[in-house]
Image (cartoon, rainbow, N blue to C red):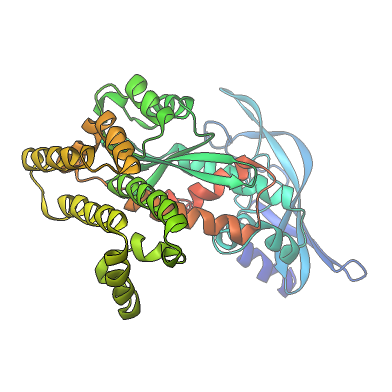
Length: 405
C-alpha cells in the first residue's frame, strides 16, 4: 500500500476488512475520489440487530460526499455489502463514516451542523458547494433526532409566546420550560390549537400535561382558551410587562387626545412612557413643566407609577389583592375613559393578573428567546419553509445534544 492510501485510512478510520483500493484526482473538476473495497470472504455486523460475523449476500456501489481535501471536493466510493442475518434477513451494511439514507459522511454532516449555529444555510451551501436543500435535509435529520430525546418529565412551569416567522402576519408559537430556561416546543400559528398540539407532544418526551401547574402568557384570547381547555391543572399568570404595556397604551391615548387641545404635548410620547428614573435631565424638566400644563395626563402618569409600584414592592398575594382593588377603585372614579377601559380589562383578567404574586413568572425569559429567534430570522434573511425556521429555533434555543451524531 502506498503512503497516501495509508494516511487516508488513518484519517478516515478505515479498518480491516475494509481497505482503500485506489485514489483518483480529477483535476479538471477539482475532485478527489477515494475508492474502498473489502477483502474476499469478509464478514460484517448486521446493521439492524448488531449480530456479528454475518456473511455477504451481495454488494451495492455507494458514494458519500466527504470534507473537502484542501479546496477540492472529496468523495468516498464503497462497494457496500449487504449482510445476510439469520434473524433480520438481508440488510445493507452501514460503514463508520456514513449513516443510512445519507449521501454525506458523518464528518461532513458534523461540519454543517457546527456552521449552522452561526451562519445562514445559504452561505454554508455556497461555502461547501452544495444545494441548500440537501443541507437542510442534514440539519432537519439531526435536529429531529436530538429533539426526540428531550425529556419533559419534570416540567411543571411553562411560558408561551408568539413570534413572527415572516411578513404578512405569519406566526410561530413557542413554548418554554420556565425552570430550565429553554424552548420545549414550537409550532406554526398562534391560535387555540397551538396549545393542543403542545399537549399532544408532551407524552413523546415523558411529559404530562397534568403535571403543568403554572403557565405564563399574554392576554391572547386564543392562548387563554387553549390553556383552559388543555391545561386544566395549570394556573394562568398574565405577564406583568404585558399588563403595564396596556396601561401605557391607555396613557398614550390620553396624550393624543390632549395634544389636540394643547399642542405643546406634541413629541412628548416617550416622556410619559418612561419611568422617572429612566428620563434624561432634559426630559425630567419637561415632565415637570408638562405635568403642570395638563392635569389629566399628569394624573394618568401618576396612576401608572402607582400601579407599577404594586409589582415592585408587594410580594404577598393577599396584600396585592387589596392594593390592586384599591387602585381599581381609583381608576373607575378617575373620569379618564382610557384608564377606565384598562381597569375593565384588568377586572376581566383579574385571576391571572393576581396569580403573578404567587407564581412570580414573567415573560422575561420568553421575550429573551423571542429576541434570539428574531436574530435567527434576520441572519438568514427569512426562511422559505416554516419547518426550517422551527428547526433553527430548536437548534439555537432548545439545548439539544447533537454532539454525538
